[in-house]
Length: 276
Length: 256
Image (cartoon, rainbow over all chains, first blue to last red; front, side, top):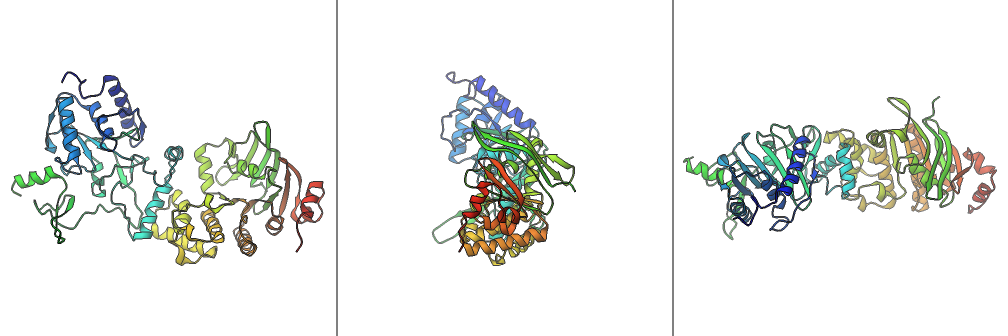
């Protein structure tokens, strides 16, 4: 594939993105604006994540792509094929073998290591967006650490539902400073945001990059009398029997039968392979 | 006694036009100052300059802060001014829609200022919100209703509760009874008067309604074309107006 530069983007663009990534790593949780490029896929399909991945890839890397935990769904397959074609890097479905993992809406169950980079696709990077429509105002609120409004949202949840009903994109405070949207991962994954791996977040349409460096403190917001609860369905996985993984509910017929299976396909397949 | 608010030579221009010019006054703790004048006389400009919503071109606004004593608000950093804006100061808008979050329940509206200054105990916040709804005569059963389901008078009372919940020392009010019918106005005024007296608040009330200042204000400032043309005790100014414009203003009120 000589028609493309390595990993699709030209070197100047990669430089620009890497600068944004470095700034993001230096100021954990801060949304760094960057000049997002048109990518050969629609907005909402992970253009931000793809650009961050492209800027991080080296020819020696092994890439894994996850879509809602699965390696075999449309979004994951197409992005994996894209980089196979434009970068010629090795790809894998095994979490442990990957050096760069691009993910949509999940963090792998297997604990990540210092040698790995986790790249998130982010639709709306601004955690305050649905509370305060003005970008000018939200930037000011971040600058002044004016986060009372975030708790108003959680208050409303409890007042209306009797508990904090936010189940995904649950807001976190990074290193005691910035409130951050962890992308729409289930709140079950929030504790895993404190990780040994470098975590990068790319929002293509919104033109923002932010980062959580390894071992950064990430606290899920809550109330003293309504503490954060990383809940999941109270079932074991129907395929591998795992009790500790996040589950998808799958409807199996028109009569209402359903089964709960691991959302992380690699984790589930690995456990079944081990004869667990 | 140090004045709570000491304003010196405050001037705001809109290009060549004058918003308000060379306004100076002192406000002492527990005092209510009324600012009256016709539309376009600069009273709202003045209020917005004082509250930090507009940047004046010249002058000083010295506020007696709890921690550091008298300080010029205009030279404070933005975080300090915001902190002041949600602890010691309160701003009651004429239109409750400007001062409330219409998509958030009454309890959330009252609790916002508490959460902004670090309250993170749901039960405690809710208890305080319930207490304040009671004080402004809103039934506790409506704590989870949105303000859009409230009448105009209730919205205005809710806005007052939301502002007073952190126990501010200085309240700015911009036509607090504007747009309400007279019987609701009367009850609201009664409520405000009660709260101001009981909490020992200082307040600056901007209005064109002389009845409002007669009831609420200790002192009165009359503005015309951006200038203060007369000041004095409320009863003195209203019963014995000196400036020709004030005489016109007082005599314009219909007697029923």
